[in-house]
Image (cartoon, rainbow, N blue to C red):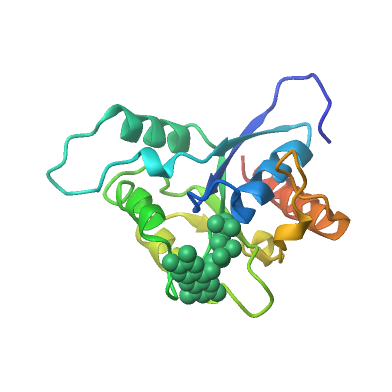
Length: 184
Ligand SMILES: Cc1cc2nc3c(=O)[nH]c(=O)nc-3n(C[C@H](O)[C@H](O)[C@H](O)COP(=O)(O)O)c2cc1C
């Protein structure tokens, strides 16, 4: 687990679908970054608000180039997004639209955590599955879990303190690590 000084052998990109400052989705991923196995270097991407509105004719500004580079350089991607109006937040869908037509996520192992309250958030994950299918990502089904994170579970440092959630995150990270070990 975290603390080992050897060079990471794999890179896991953690992508938050929320732009909210005190986001529970971003907090979950920030926590996951600190719990990542020694052999996996986890990097949080929480900059979807920097991306301009996608258009097929749009120039690719530096923020988009960075977004693409982050994805291309990752061995796997773990998403965590809120549900807005039964689907993905527009800003997150916009970020994903920038990847459609590219190959950055093609064949890439991906998973998601749903941190919404029990029985919530399924519309977001369903849409995410659809979009990831369009870009040819490979879903690690066993790592896609519902792990509710209450706002009171987030500490002053912006990480989730609840041990049950932390244990769940470790399980997700372990499944991803094992998938990468078996396939790369
Ligand atoms: C515009 C808007 C629409 C929302 N729509 C839904 C919804 O359809 N279903 C749901 O379960 N929650 C919905 N919510 C609640 C958010 O998913 C919830 O507040 C979530 O914790 C936000 O994630 P964050 O803390 O990472 O920002 C909505 C919130 C907002 C602001």
